[in-house]
Length: 233
Image (cartoon, rainbow, N blue to C red; front, top):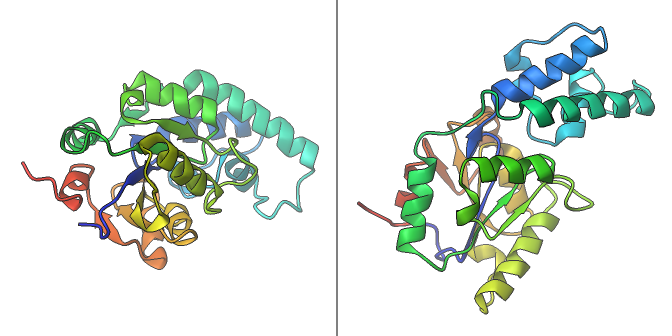
């Protein structure tokens, strides 16, 4: 069980709550085809996910450092990707098995425990996807990669949620009492960068990145989240 006991749980979206690999990869390849560029294998694109839509597009274009492709070209590519994904974001995306049951168990055991989403995905599709799958009832807030001037692993978004949880509950919530749940080193480093605890999800899109980031705990499935919080059947 995390110690001290958490007063706030914050979840990543892609690779943690939902498996969006196919829709994201299809959207990237639709963009590449539109630009008359070769499409990429799904596994290659999956390795590019986690740092927001702009970085995903840059990596797919072979320009992760932002110095090889004209900014206007990247902006047009990004807009095509976003427009395509907006329409196709729920073609093949699904909740990981056990997510609803785990969130329900946590909420039943700890009715007043604030939970939120912090993703690098743009905020509008993040909120639309959560609404589609009935997740909104569990979360007091859902922030995306364009909600702030920075993205994860910068801790600004997580610190904002900590402050909001303090206001919501009327009690101080500290970073050490916060748990960030995610499938990649981006999520774990976000927690590290503000002194929060973390749960690394080995079932997600980027589990190969977890080891170097050293999460506080590991979960092989969403059904382990309640157990890590001391909830037993």
